[in-house]
Length: 226
Length: 46
Image (cartoon, rainbow over all chains, first blue to last red; front, side):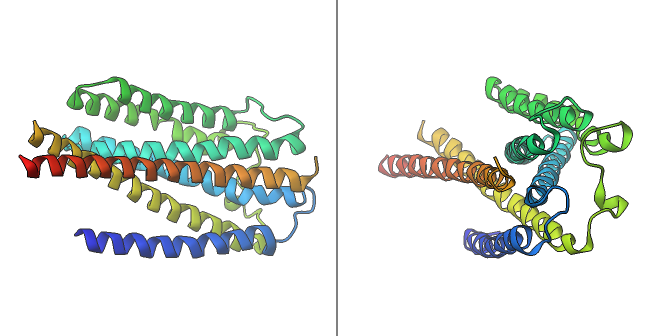
């Protein structure tokens, strides 16, 4: 893809993302009905869940790119894995802060060591560690291989996060989508937020990968200048 | 604190985290762009 097409695609994506975000905000904060027991506090759920799913998607991309790197040893997969891990950590940070803000008035505590909360925190810390490991390894080939193996192993925690509320007793709300427990009037807000956050993930990944391409160009020019 | 305060706080956190992430990307893009420009000029001169 040439530079002009790429920047046009970015502009189009930015426009669609803007519209999707506005629609998601309107549906979640205005259009969705007020929940009977939690009131307006329940509206946090739309963004909290959407950010969690976007974060897990990003870690899934990291996992796929890590597997691709181990199989093919192509540097581009290492770069994609790095971009996905950074973006995923940003989304998980949103989840880990908005969760306690919702929990305090509902559970009367900011945090509890339940399986879902603990596995989510561990997942975030694993990818923070992944980014730190990358920073302290200088040899690019060694760094890429160690990071790929780390990324593959770290992703083992992602299914634990997803299934924790199904496998163990947990204070965290049960999976409402699968059980059909979500009110039909709330569904448009939920799906709009999910779509907006997945689009945001695509946009951020593209921007982050473009930054990596610039780094690569800088390395190439650096070698030429020497 | 009432529920609206918590809702506002959660929304503020979301937009602050996303804004910081985008600002950091933008700052790094600018820095790298400047550095690439400087190296290109240096290579053209030599």
